[in-house]
Image 1 (cartoon, rainbow, N blue to C red):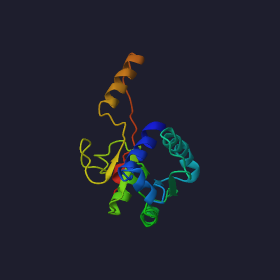
Image 2: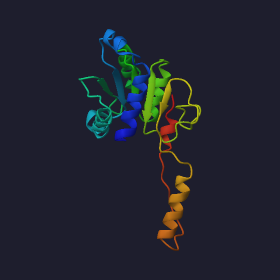
Image 3: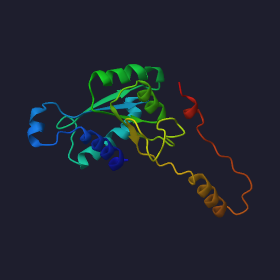
Image 4: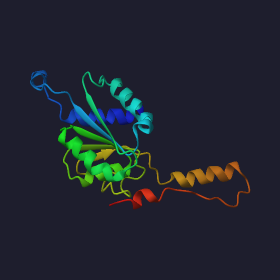
Length: 180
């Protein structure tokens, strides 16, 4: 995630970047990225450093030439509207989100601020984008979703354990069902 998510956030930020050095001098503010997490700061620490490192890989250092506005729902999804409103009020250039529930909350706010998501298994099924090929609107992101992956894993398991007769597969059906 270090390079992919951090680089994607930067790429989206650069869309609004000034085209010339003279234009850049006229803009006194640094690019501002809102990062919205459904978890607590302690849990979010697992992805904070990779985001910082990914941005640093392409020359952006928090507090020096980019501002990261971190917001945490701490597992209280009803806080999303308030947290999204804070980021909109701060006039962030882009909002980076973790997970489908968080991405849908930002989309529901109806903002035209660019939104970049990560850790969304199936953005189409989860209602984050209308199409993987052409997401449309102001939301984009990265996913590792591969519809053939469960079949391949089951085949590998059956090869590793000859005679395997029963397999239970557990999944998180609740995430997609949490749409409000």
